[in-house]
Length: 388
Image (cartoon, rainbow, N blue to C red; front, side, top):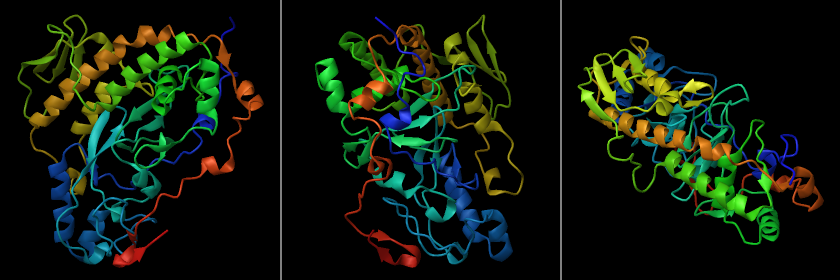
């Protein structure tokens, strides 16, 4: 049976037509790995007056203290101009700041240069966002990353699995599910298609499809495992006994260096030590960057003194240790899936040309645009309500 070549495989942009550029913050301080620090930064900003408040805010062409913008969908951030703002910090929300790096964000539209409200409108417990990484054939790591959290990864783009809240209207080329059902002999669910894509995506990015029902089932199975590990919802992932990472030597108050000992399978944070850490977890990369190194750097790099970003924990929080142990576990389990992913050589291909002949491609122009999801008022600038 022939196997699919890179050029034969459909483009991901055709299979999941609606995409949104990732949010662009414009300033780093509204996000960080520690929610309490974000609240302290907000309080510091609002206590400052005049030029001091403006300097701390770090204005851009898109956002100043005088910008009037609407409320972020589903959030409680204010809509009055920040120059006269008061009150407590909006409750920070969990976001994906980098591949496999969950952090926090102050969900206030006035702080974000380009928040992409259309993403916030469809973000709920059913949603899964697929984000393209800068992967190439020469770089290690996945081509796409899936997350339940609002992704801040750049350069993107972001492709929601569903165009409407509540898991309604999959963001798939119209007719694709029916055509797959005809060729495979059963009706795949939207999450099955997503699972197949995360397991088989190639740089481009392209998503090779198959009409081999057995191969499809194996791909969906490993893809579902990938989704569970990357989303980390439900039961927490665990390694078998004897392979679970533990803190073997206490971590220092604020570690500055990270080192991996491959012979001992130990991760050293200054004089602190965590083991066992499998080589696969240490080597796991996204966009050519080791995930563990990026995660550590984002928590220990020295911010510019006098800025809001300089407000951060003075000692290493216990929560970060727990997050690090879980991240090591996730990366180790992801690395164990690599041989199964390599076995997914796509035979009996369903090519882009096949989908064109079937009328599935190209997707109609409407499929590239967001769905109309507003059935309620949203608060606009200065508290005025708007219905779009």
